[in-house]
Image 1 (tube, rainbow, N blue to C red):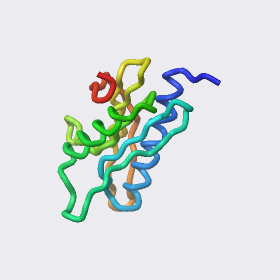
Image 2: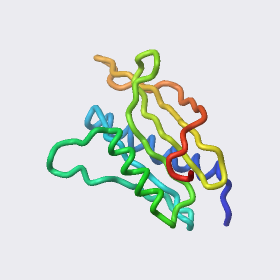
Image 3: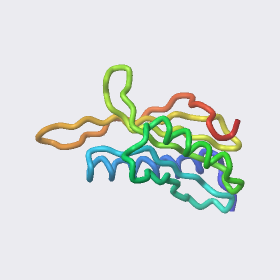
Length: 135
């Protein structure tokens, strides 16, 4: 069975944003993490050991995740998920998606914390994304 790049990226972004939502609901935050689709079409989570010295800078974690994905020969699609603040000040979970056979995308899921209603999520949107893995 063959999958299109669109199907791969849809599956990967669903997996990553679901985990980000789960972490936000449970902990109120999340640290950068990643996922990949391997050559067989399996979605595989990718994380980094944060060590015992406290949390490293998010941009350093993103760079290390990208380096690990670049070094992996068994990858056809990647996604790196991290927390961002949009231009209007809204928080969002952002996933930078790449596929060997498609243009990179940055997908954002805005969210806000409401005192009485908890976490509320906005509409997902996408824009062209950076190349971190398949350069």
